[in-house]
Amino acid sequence: MAEIADDGGGGHGHKGGKKRAKKGSTRVDMTPLVDLAFLLLTFFVLTSTFSDPQVMALTYPAKPDPNKPQPPEAEINNAITFLLSEDKIYYYENEFHAKAEKGKPATTLEETDFSHNGIRKLLIEKNSLILDKLAPLEKKKNQGKINEKEMLEEVKKVKEKFAKKSLKVLIKTDDKATCKNFIDLIDELKICNIGVIAPVDIMKSEQELIKAKAK
Image 1 (cartoon, one colour):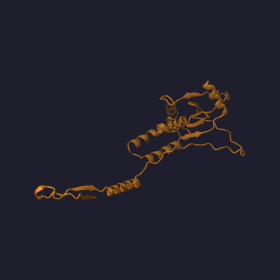
Image 2 (cartoon, rainbow, N blue to C red):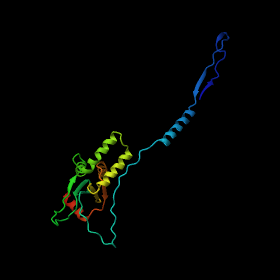
Image 3 (spheres, one colour):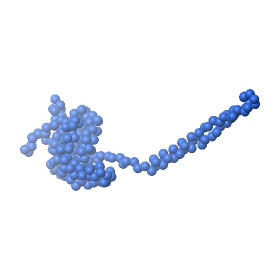
Image 4 (cartoon, helix red, strand yellow):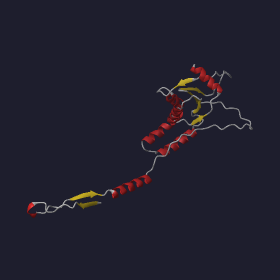
């Protein structure tokens, strides 16, 4: 509220007995305005809708039960295994073969990075089936025909429908791998809508292959 404060001026300061006009000072009390600002802030905070956190699902393989016979391993198709060591990123496709067997050559490692022609280009090429199916949904979202929640639900349905044909990614790290490379790789996998991502333990034969590649 505004207040007029009397400064106690005035009197007979001039000759001839003329009275001097009293002067007042104006002071504005800001307390009610501050209270109103906090009330409005509280109202908007309580009534606003915040964006839902987006998380990425990681698939961790279950440990085999030593007391139960294990079924024969199925052949791995349409999969990429990334091996992270120091600041290097290696990968190989499908199954790992330490040596040539059953008419299949021994596995060789390829090196990649986060450049324009690196990991993202590789993932887009290998996961083109899913990305082509998701392109119309992305267009609808950009046009405002579907919201973020509806988009995520449709993406989930597409991934489940084409789960057997979609790209699977395994991530393995050794003791020298950097956390930055691991996080950046996860980001690239999310951007390329990879359906199955599984961090697993690195094998000794894979570590030996990394050492040979690094020489």
